[in-house]
Length: 244
Length: 186
Image (cartoon, rainbow over all chains, first blue to last red):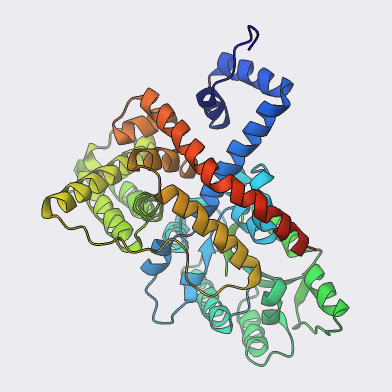
């Protein structure tokens, strides 16, 4: 070790966990800065932390507690961190990606949807982004039920609320004009609650178009460059993220 | 309903709401500790009940989370003690991976979730509690030590051992699969 003191694993862990005081932090930071291997270690530790968060972002316990007679409903809807949202796209790539957006979503990380709902009154602005990227019709139907409940409840209590549904992948079906079950439902929801907006992912549309599939979207659906982009933007603005 | 004198003067109801609102957090942590969904709910429930009963004893409201987690840790301790005493060794329900049908995109993600949970579940109890407090709840080492009633040095060494073990069991798999996953992403 030629005279130079090695940064111990414990110190490196404390560095990543934000547990070092000014002087110690500066010392470790300088060493990390200068040493590619240490930098890689730091990345791995961050990835491990992110992986653990992701693994418990939604737990069976949280779902089991929502005993709704409608079945899936909110059980399938889970508030989660930005990281969790991104993981849906990148899958394993999260392992070598630092948790860039973590702090933006501290609230969403705290717990399940029911918890958020319970906290509703104390939230500054009721803004909820519902991200739909799966195709289970029952789940989607249940999600619409819950969204309607939420809007109705807010109206009854005179609370400001904004809900946006952003759909991509197989979830895009929920926004299709020619879908007999969802299109009429969305139309009536939109009529009753102007605070509901609908956003489709351009990349999904283009991918489907490339396969020769024509996608006709329900009226009032706007198109975002990509669902990922939309989610990240909204999280930055402090929206609560719920994934179906 | 013995909530202490604060209830009469306004802090009580707010605190009570905050305790109720922490249920999700407690449930998640309990699940990360025991990996049994039903037990986790029970533990979180009894922690909330105890906290509501003892709400008057919380002197510093900004320490609410640590206080609640400490109550939760004690609930788990009690549970384990009871189980030892009654010799009730029934197999813990394996709810490590969410069983719902998922489209391909989230299936890969559910696989990771399952692997991480299994690796965490395989850690010794003490290491598991430290690593989940620090990584899931961003507890400081001092808070983790206080919640689990162990010295900071022990927090650090357990954390180190836990992470080494987790990396050992997770990184190989992640590396192997990263390749195949990236190929399937456009």
